[in-house]
Image (cartoon, rainbow, N blue to C red; front, side, top):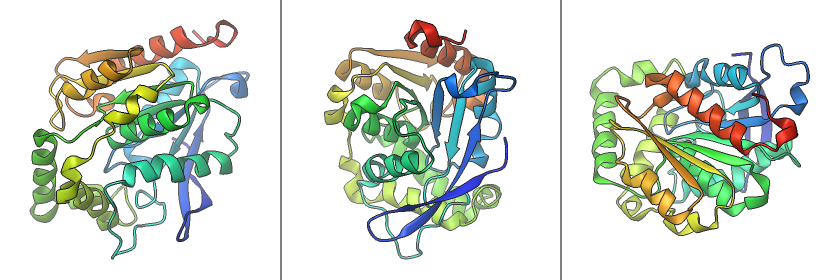
Length: 275
């Protein structure tokens, strides 16, 4: 992945610096004509934690890519030590942070494809539902649309591993403020009020093509998540990858890439199809 850059955005209470990276498909003669894919990371992710998957997908499909670290993650402005993310933190990321970032980096007027993983998939769905004219389509990988007991069980286990195991040391390679990233996500999900969190009521407003992908062995959610999207947004296509956990881009990258490219290609206007 190429070197990251930074852009400042103004939120309600402060300015924050966002780490981001542009990706152009290798050897593409007309990159600005290629479809744009915006990558939204998981609850403990960042630009660096995607590793080279976004570049490989863009190269394989002939896409442009935009990867960024949400506030509190990667090299973006860390969360303040006393800042507690509210139950609505994913809505705020979708409706406050993402539109400002896209405007600041010059994506206004374009209709990107949103490629989101886990919390990033939920943020992508919220954005697409509330900005239906601004999105070409959503690829939601291991999305959350409501809270399941399995999710909370795995999130509690992650907290134990962070406190007593090696998770903190492993995450510290990818986040300037590792406690900012971990506890922002973990405290929000484990707050008692978060048990009632849901975006199910928004899904009927989705108008763009939706691809919902989940590993059959996802340790953070059951197939009720992707099936729930399809029940509320009939255009949704569901793909379940066998022998795959919560991170298909790590566990089954070839299967995910082939599925994503086929989906995007099928929904592109004929003159802009790249494969």
